Length: 314
Picture 1 (cartoon, rainbow, N blue to C red):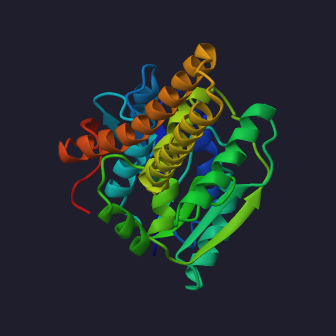
Picture 2 (cartoon, rainbow, N blue to C red):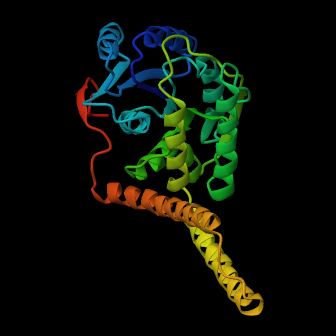
Picture 3 (cartoon, helix red, strand yellow):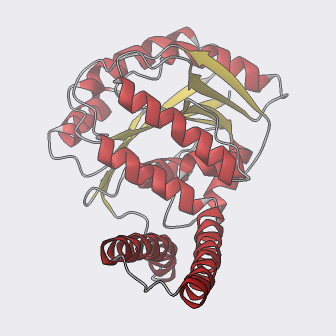
């Protein structure tokens, strides 16, 4: 009988985990004649009692496995660790807050069993419960990402998906330190079926994704799967060189023909500040790419495990 391993990244989710386990356990009971289940929770350096809750769950249910990091490494690292340690024929990624409906798992499993698809992914068609500003910038991110990158990132795509072992192994081949999973899922390819559902609010706890964190995550996505920002900075540099050349010619001709002195110190100061800002912007873009390169060549571990009950012999 085939096995589904469910990878669940957790950061300060002590309140949500019991609800999550109860729901996925119900689904697993309805599918017991089709497949076995493994629940792999990845504690990403939580500061609450998440690890304690996971220990208790693992004592009650031998299917519950957990990995606990030495500190907070981020959700991307937690997902990578879960995929690396998952032992199932199929592997799912789900959030512990139940914003990813477990009720979709039977349909996802049946779809993969037919052999036509390698992955069944999900996307939200509404953003109920989110502020209008946050929704606007989220949609803007997907538009820009698909415009500047050759890797498609579906609007509203969630990390919640069920993947074949072949696809999981392909993802694990990409062992880069700076990870952007939404891009990686698209980069590895494979036939993917998309399931749509309306946004579901958290069952408990508070979101860990502030607007600022989402903005930084978006910048990581831009630099991870596109070099277009570098091309833009080059284009802006050439454009300003041409503009400055035209202005120099204009000022020289105006002075020689009409004898007008060069004036306008306030406008000159504004121009200098504007050009200086553009230069800093372009330098910042190059700095982003250099910083990513710096972190990659240091070859630091993506995560460090402090405690786990996962059997290394798979």
